[in-house]
Length: 156
Image (cartoon, rainbow, N blue to C red; front, side, top):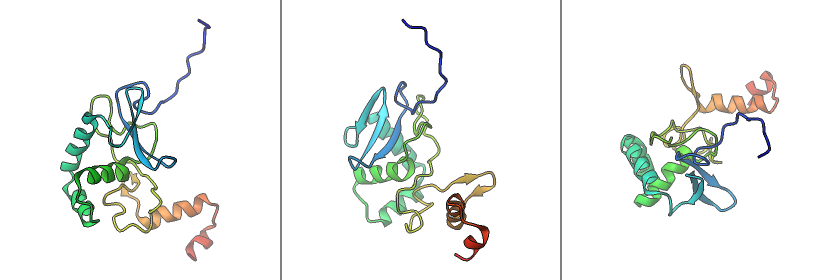
C-alpha cells in the first residue's frame, strides 16, 4: 500500500460508524439518514433510529402538542416532521451517536424561518452562553453577514 499521511477530518455520523445523521434531500425531496455506511430513505429507516426518536419525542410533549396543532396527527408524519424540524441539517455532529444518545437539536434553516408559527418551538433556535437568540437577533446576524452597516440594520 502507498504510505499516505494521516488526515484528521470529521466525517458525518453513520458514514464509518453506527451513529445516525438525519438530513433533508432537496434533490429527492425526502428525509434521509446515514447509518452504518449506508444512506437510508424515510420509510426504510432502521427501527432503532425510529425508537430513539420516539423516546425523544416522549421527553418533549410540548413539541408533540405543537405538531398536532399544525394538523399533523398521523404517527409516521409526526415522526418525520419532528426529525425534519429538529435534525434536518446535514452536518458533522451526530443526531444520534454510536451509543444511541440523541444530540441537541440543531439550527436548521428550513426555508420557513421568520414566518413559521412554530419557530423555536418544534425546531431549535441558536443557543448561546446565556440562552437562545431571538428571531430579531438571528435576523440581525444575517444582515451583518450580508455586509449591512449598523445604520442600515437599525432602519429595517
